[in-house]
Length: 315
Image (cartoon, rainbow, N blue to C red):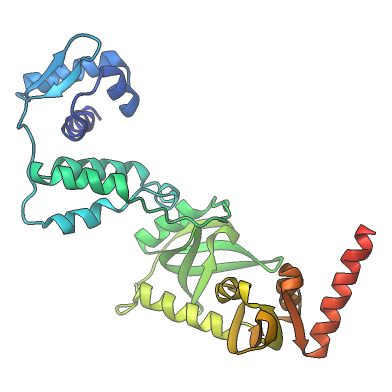
């Protein structure tokens, strides 16, 4: 809509100062001719916009033409500016809305805050993605999202452990864990969690449902996560490792260190807990000569057998 574009031009000029017609056209994905017509419309409406000719020319607003936002402290404004568009907003189709809101927020900052705002943006960047994120296909996310908004029952085909299930659920909320999306829903009188990338087909039904009065999505997710961790398989073992890898081990997600004893020559013995014997073997082999399985015998034998198999492959 043209009205939205005129507002966007006004905000871009307030936030960035002088901009060429080409820069504005690229930013708003229109032609330069359209930008010139929009500038005439802004001027006719009384907005003090003017053009400077020449190599360093461009469109600008008269000095002092700016909206002031009152009632917020500098620190409060900065916390909002630290938020940044991410792939999660793109998944929900909200990336353009975020950019529009962000420009409006910048435009509303009083002049006295501009220096601190610029300094903050130059020195702090928040990237919520991890190093090893997997990009999942989410063909049903928009349908699931719409069902959540409308409070309508969702009919879906769900894949888990290579098996296919058909479910009719009451979608209560969406949760993003890293770059992975989950659906919290009521099914057969119970609260359950579904990984959205495993939903193969989804259809919003005509039947609505009543959302539980006291349902707390954040509280449900926290409790669900605790239950999931508590139900993970546990495989106790004793290992020894070089002290140089202690910090790495403390961050190992599939191993928990209970007690440690320092021994000679910079080595440490520890009682630990893995998920399974298979994962224990993989982790120990991943540290090569810097880690050794001590107990149980089953684990020692499996690690030794795998190490011999690797050796034979290279001989």
